[in-house]
Length: 113
Length: 113
DNA sequence: CCAATATTTCGATTATTTGTGAAGTATGGA
DNA sequence: TCCATACTTCACAAATAATCGAAATATTGG
Image (cartoon, rainbow over all chains, first blue to last red; front, side, top):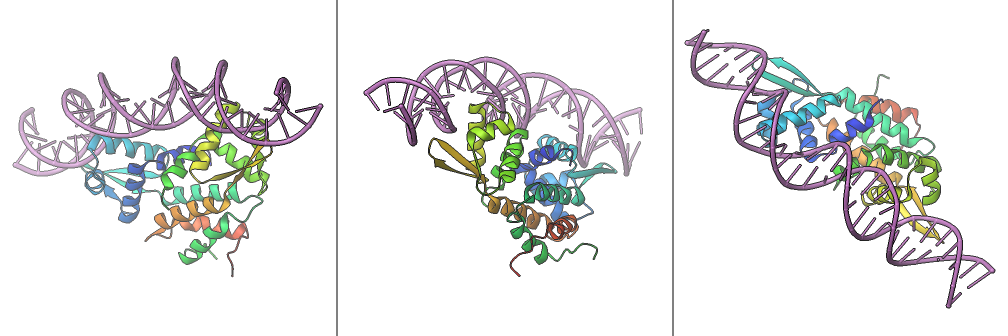
């Protein structure tokens, strides 16, 4: 991963983690910026800034729909970030990924078998 | 996880991510601060600061051994952080954890079966 | 074209983070 | 006890990040 730092930085912020969570909750069809603002209680310009940071980090996508701009979480990028951290950390020591493994199995999100 | 933000912040820094990586490479027995400094090329006081940040975030541990202080990665905490992010993101959408699942299986770090 | 809506960009301010030399603390050995 | 070693803490300057109102931009409907 070229810039894990950028993605980590983007997530290492209470407001932005909330934004990301709200977008995950909203699902793949995403949420208009205005609605997001209501959901997370953030001034419009602050929200816009933070969405910009998340999007630059690759964690969210933005598409225009009429007057609104629809933001959505980029699930693949998030998965890639976690996978990167896992591989980067697991090397030589399976102890890191044991708890993760449990969660992955519980979440029933098996890869293409 | 009480403070995922704190852990994410700690990792969202080039120097600190390097430190953490070096400690993972060093394995469970850890590394003295001085050696770490050589490994990552960081001034003593800067290193100490960053180690403090990592330790406050729960990602590393420190124990004194004679004149040296031995730092080690806290694998469990790292795993918990990733697990938290995964659960927080996977909710309702398995798309996030699919790539992770692949890595977890490849790393052969199965949980207690 | 004009007004209304939805969002972004700008600019200024305040807060936080970073890096570092110098001074301080703890430990072990002569 | 005195000195050297191994780190940490302090103080502070420089760099970054966060916030928010006001002004700017894009889009739609009348």
